[in-house]
Image 1 (spheres, rainbow, N blue to C red):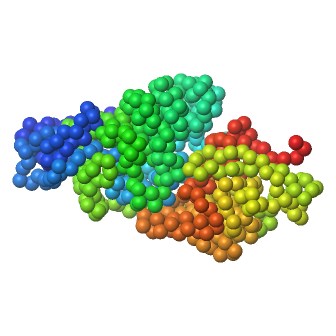
Image 2 (cartoon, rainbow, N blue to C red; image 1 turned 135 degrees about the vertical axis):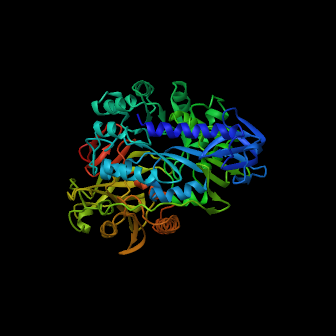
Length: 599
């Protein structure tokens, strides 16, 4: 028991009581606002909020708490809302460090996140998780961690840079600021009672923390087995029917709206049409790009989308604040505006627009009318983390040629079909030409070459396959952001450009790149584990816009194509993927040949 911490908490609580009683002055009073009360669902006009030691002391008419040195902010009738809480997101997907992301998130009204750093865990294991967690602990943004559960996401179908075991999860649950177990993607393993998954869930439950989920299947029996095993939430819900099924079984529903995954329009119908209770519903982002952060926002964009679909603004804010705090058992500190809670407040002109003009965290003004006021400590990752791309050798065009077992001029192959704005893929079959014994891509059928190269241990392992749906007409693209093992993923219309893209990206230390006719069109260097840039938001946003334009130049019209591309290697979401070991049939969880012979 930490007696010093308990004594400090008591001292703060005592002081809060003295402010509420009018015996001590507040540090800060926000006066004359309309309170968004997420406990009762009310909007309360002419309300003040008094703050002491970073926590709320009094809510109501707080003139009695104003002293000579009290800072007073006149809300001028603006709405006073709790800071927004993102219950499930991956900072790595923003391409920014935790520090740079926090600047963008705070400016949009997010005051706490529950990050799942399983991307860096797949590259550097517990060490990577610890580094991101430590970076987050020193920021004005409250950064809670859900400790990654599935590293690698599967044990027999791919090779990551590291592996986490039950002992790692048990240790992680002791860290200050770890709020639960990260999304349990290996739902078949949970259902089948695999010792590793069962052990991780048990360690989390013994620590009194929540087990967050990832259940994209429609199998009703498996869903109940998954919930019964201890998983209590899911963000992989894409239909109204799936949402209802999970809510009816007591599961907490996380409705997602990110840069590529737009689930609010459909799933929010459980609220607007089925009129279910919303206590167990949260709004989350999951994956957001830098451009989205600047142009649309962070969680405030998700709340706005729910309102646009017909949800009452206060209800939408509840789903982005108190519901999330209660789920993670942190509602004693965050999620609402009441005595004793952390003073994380937003001043908003129009609830339907959800654009905060002022943001306060722990009683400190961190953002005001377009200006970021908070101080952000610098955080430098070790050189090991910045040197994460390890190839056995320089790659050549020959490495991207797939030999045919057929003796004819054409052959049938399995193809990964990408689906715009979806994490899922479709398994299709196509007939491709064979020339010189090599299976050729066919841009006329929108079929291009695909490769996955092991990049963690320099094994030289390369797998080849074919993809459809990106509409590339020329050139090649590559990425070390390749969920979840984050090997080097390359796709292109010709082997020469594919080799250039892979080699140049390795030279940059990872990230994303687009090339055409032997020339680099655009790149986003990500030297932190090959997943995150060390540059400011504005720089990364500019680079990402240039990359998006390059994808379009190559012929791709998709929304957020590099997000869709980065998931082509994720062997836990149906139907078919590529890993460094080969082509994966996710419905059967097994490797299958690319070429179809003898069927």
